[in-house]
Amino acid sequence: MLVAPHRRGLGPPAPAAPGLPDVPRERCPFCPGRESETEATLAQAPAEGPWAVRVVDNRYPLATPTSALTGTSALRGAHELVVETRAHDLDLPDFTVAHTAMWLGVLAARLEVLAARPGIATVMAFRIRGRRAGSSQPHAHSQLVALDRVPSSIAQRDARARAHLEQTGRALLDDTLRDELADGRRIVRDAGGMVTHCPYASQHPHELRLVPRARVSTLSALTPAALDGLAAALVDATRRLRAAGAGSDYNVLVHEPPVASRGAPWTGMYVELAPRTTTQAGLELASGATVLTLAPEDAARSLRAVAP
Ligand SMILES: [Zn+2]
Image (cartoon, rainbow, N blue to C red):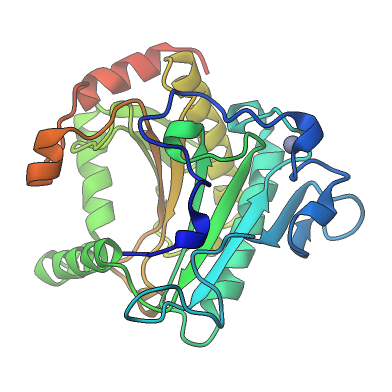
């Protein structure tokens, strides 16, 4: 549990209406010309000249290098914010592939900086879009979080993948991808070294997983060609979601293993897209089970059918 009373009122009350929070361009702290309204720039791309992608410390951090949040144990780490574009009203499906690759390159570089810090056990990158996904700003942005411990779901995923390698001699992500390709019904796109598919056990309607064909542990370990492939797959996927009516509120999650498992043969980075069109009800909270109202095979069929 992250107890963070200083963030009260930042997020939308649930259940929020879908769509973007109403912050007009004139008051947007992420627009060019209002850089002084955010924390200082930590990194930018390109390195010289006007920024196209900009990284700052989060003004309302969930974790910082020195101070502890309220609670019984002091959480330390970092929480950074990435302004993805100078344009106030563009979203990922509007980006060019080249700009998307530049943004992903910034995420990869910052994840390396954070992972190299003493005491950091987990790094993650994610993107929130729309009120139902947690947006408090409409201007396209993503976040980087580093923690001094490994949250349980990330530890479980790592342990499961490690056990699979010990039992079978193969990487779990390789086996999952092989099975999905052999079955074919949940594949949406297979191009540029990147496979886009609806997971067999999707947690959300229209959920998508973007998996590199060549196994790497971290975003930064992707070759430049594979990073371009991921950028193209992300733009394609969000365009398909938009065309299918599921693209207004969604999260993008870059899944990497804990820092201690980086480079281990059971690990593999992948990207998840989670459209936020539904909410948890009673059975979900009572049991931890997920009620999925759209079969992943049907989601994949509809996403294949729409023109990106
Ligand atoms: Zn803006």
